[in-house]
Image (cartoon, rainbow, N blue to C red; front, side):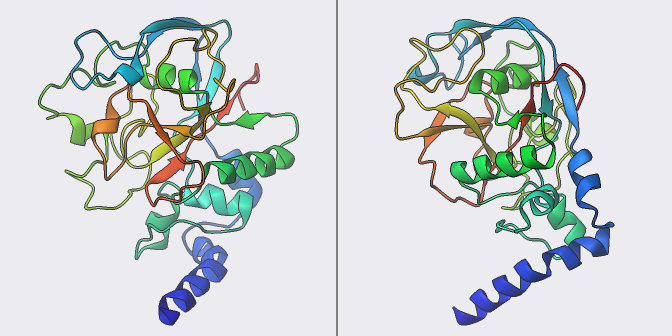
Length: 268
């Protein structure tokens, strides 16, 4: 146990040096290098489709959500490199022998409150930008990218196409992978299914009765849980576009990460 603790301490302290070994460690360049995809104004049906395999009462009733203005969502899940640049720490438990592969993989093992600390630090580094977690509606809208199928790549009844789009138990070798290696959705957003679960801003509710229709986060009458989306390298069931899971916000699982949104009128 002591050896494990010492090894973890060495890795954390050496993280900036390891990062410098695979790319110049430039905090500003890393922050400004977070890529975003624009999601245009529009409406969509949120929740599971009638007759959809795996559909749950938790994902009903299906309801219309309208975005009066567009928003930007990060093209990839926030990586370990980006977390280190913003926070100066390395919380992830998924490590690789090659430092570049490690730092280009999504950050993992972060709690929901820690995502809020990341937002605070990122917004302090870039005043006026107003980065935050996506609302659940924003997440599903961006994930579907105009589709109405079970997955953003189609209904895929036998999940034969899933390994082309998502790191799941069938192809992940029980670990995360560098972001952006698999096929994106129709809007060019990667890893909306698999790799790591993604925290969103909303509290979790048992169904969508009373859910906001304007795409904002649902934070009235707080529950004890926060929403995660998208499945992970350990869970393929969550890859359905409508999947709606709720978990303890303090949980620190090695397959929990996040992506961010930016609501400015100009590209970040």
